[in-house]
Image 1 (tube, rainbow, N blue to C red):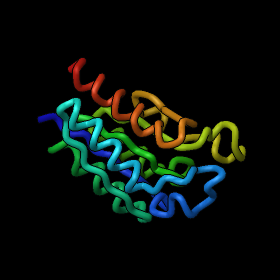
Image 2: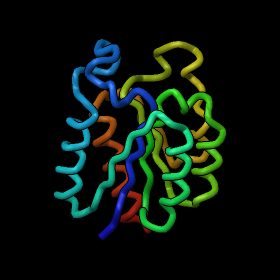
Image 3: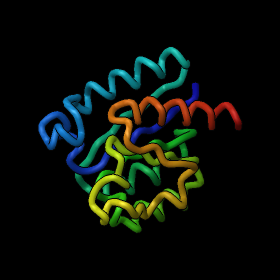
Image 4: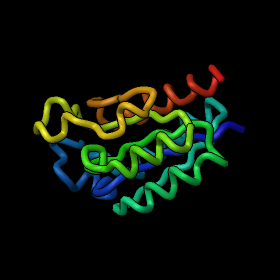
Length: 146
């Protein structure tokens, strides 16, 4: 069975508590359950992970090459700062999709630049929890192309 890895970065464990006017009222667990429900219908397996540690994210990306066909990543604030995450994505050779709950281009200027966008197949931003479902659809599309 095809496997998709969803990696979530810092502060996403605080969804529904942190700036609900920006990020919404859903928890990360709510989003995970919806993604897994849709993945089961598409007959793919999803592994959902979250860490506030950049090193964890890098390690998960490096280890993904042996187990997953696609990576979907919401690196949160690390999107704008982490060359290490960018380099890990580039190194493993797994297609990656960058996702964001908010429209990063409608926010502070420092959020307009992504360190990893250039090494990802595409970027989905601004659709709230639906960004994750769009990321799942894009990942399935990449699997079906291979």
